[in-house]
Structures are given as structure tokens and as C-alpha cells.
Image (cartoon, rainbow, N blue to C red; front, side, top):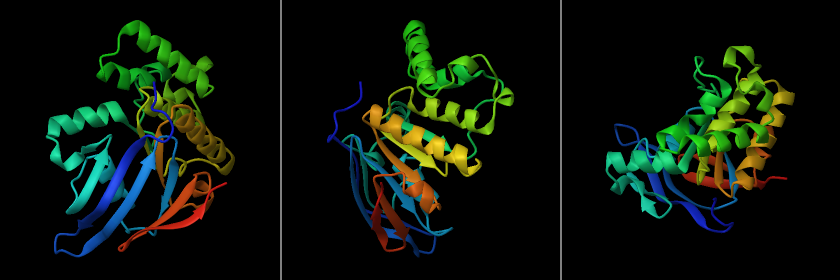
Length: 231
């Protein structure tokens, strides 16, 4: 089950990352996210949004400060321990979907559970529950090529959430979708993060997308600054 609302999921403590010559990508990033929190991070191209996402996921290490996920300092973990924590506790939603074309919708959604060693019966139950939540039960046996872009993105969301991660990271998840489908996808993502009592970070350049989050931050070389509250 997900954590109760208010439980601290993610902490950034004076986080910094630099280019090779020492010039900062960003410095002094501080943020706390509790279960149930959903925030958007905006910024100009090249400001380091993807770098930040990689740090949050433990795919890269900071040059200063710490990323603490579920009480663990990611940089202090071994590569294997970081991988296991990421597999258990992080869900990813990408702009390019990254679903596997040779697997059906239900097989794509099942992947995180298989990696975690969840038994067949429990896996089937949770996949069916997740597909129902995103409105794709009738498409369970279809392949991505047989679905619309919005349906494929819903598969990606279901796959990101099926293992009930503590932290969901969404990188421009609606950039390839038309405005109506994008709005539906963002609402679904937000609702599912809240339902699972996880925490979510949406990386986007779109103010309209950002306004679906609880809070909006702007990223620049000096840190994260709050912009406005969402609806």
C-alpha cells in the first residue's frame, strides 16, 4: 500500500550540479515532497531540467548536496542498491512513451512487477486493476501499434504506477499529444499519483501542463523558485 499523506518521500538538500569546467548547471536546490504532493518544474531549454530528473532518479550523482529518497542518500548507496531502490520506489513517464512495441498493453504494464518478482496471480490482479484505472481494460491484449498516441501514453502511466512507487517522475509526458488528449493525460497522471499516495514531479516547459500540479517551481542556475500555486 502507498504511504499515508504527509510522509516525507523526497528531500533535496543544497543540491548542485556543474559542467566539466566547474560552471554550475544549477546550485542550492532545496525541496521537500511529502506523500500526496505533486509539483511541476519549469525552465528554459538547457537550464538543467533533464539533469535534475536524472539526479532525482539516482541515475547521476550531484556535485554538491544530497538527494534523499525514502530516507536514503542516493549518492551514498552502491550502484546495485540504487538500482534496487529505483526499481521499487520510482516510476517514470516519458514524452516518447518508451513502451515496448512487441508486448501487449498488459505485458508492458506488468514489466515493473516482473522485475520486482511479484507472483503471477498478484501481478495479473494489479495489472488488470491498473488498466481499469486508466480506462484501457478493452485494450489489454492489443499492441501499441494498434492504439492511439493517447492510449499508448496511458499504458506508460499505468506501467509507471502499477508497482505503487513512492516517487513518480514525468518528463514532458504530453509533448507528443494533442491539447485535448494532453489535458486528459495530465488529469489521469495527477489523479493516480494522489490515489496511490505517492509524490510526483512533472518536468515541463508548458505553463498549462504545470498548472495541473499543486505547486510550480522555476529552475535556473541559482536554484528552484516557487512560481505559483496550481488549481
